[in-house]
Length: 310
Image (tube, one colour):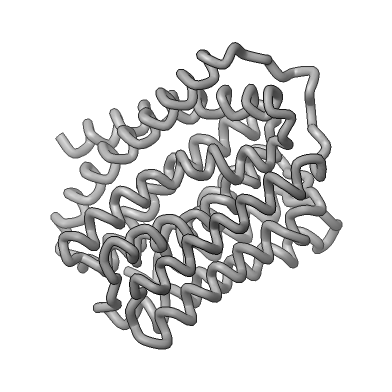
């Protein structure tokens, strides 16, 4: 039964990722907004929905380690596993906005989370408001100042859709990703529980990978269809959303305390480390691109993360 849940979840995720990508590309055309911004907003928000739902439910059920571990593990998985796998299917030419805006914002958000957790071992409601306010300011900046900053990659391959179709694809795609993640998480979590591992281990491994599957599905479909700006923007944006929106909203609803100290002594350092690693990979050995070699490095790092966690 658990394997059926996992299989059904994967099918929904693939379909949902395809529908969401269609709506995102069409929306970028209709609003004349660069695709990387759509990837960092619309697609990132939809693919971060599973993390938000899981974290809120976990925090309300006094499973704060599941809420925190889910976000920290998902951020590691997004850059180590998802970006690593995606790069095996094709290289990504990185836009200047990545190191001028996107990467710094991700680092600032990650550092804020680290500071809040280290200072009191809890994310309070005030700190949640600070995180969410930072997200709103970031989105305003993106839409106001970055709108014309990115050159489209392959406009001749894009399809302009009617508004009703864009909305339908967006809603159905988002629901498909959410529903697929729910099925996958349930199946995978039940399997993990059979092995008797802790809540934190489940959160930073099984649940985080499960909630990162939407990003993987959306990114693979994007890179196969040569919408690489959406692929990279989705992953960076998802990490930003996970911290500022998921933990921000969750902690506004209820404070999130740290129970398992290894979240602070181990897991969050992996999240910070792999976030910092992306920048030198973009510039070395050849500037502003990521390829399959970088993918292998990222997957190797993620493999070490999972090994030492277990």
